[in-house]
Length: 101
Image (cartoon, rainbow, N blue to C red; front, side, top):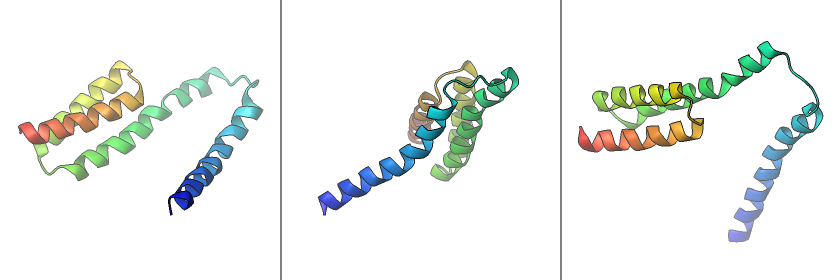
């Protein structure tokens, strides 16, 4: 059973890695226009909003905790921290606010 899970995990890794690798191989020498680069720089934060906003509402029925968590996430992402750090901060803050409030 454990070997089967290992093979499934490796297969999933390969299947998701190949579509990410192919564009990187073919696009490494291509210079994108400045407007497109600027547009692409906003995508992580748009995805971040799509991930955090619904998740915070699903994890807590405590409205003050939800509002405080969303405010903190907005401030931290506005500062420009890595989106992974923003997600971690949102998880920790909703957990702490649920305990405190």
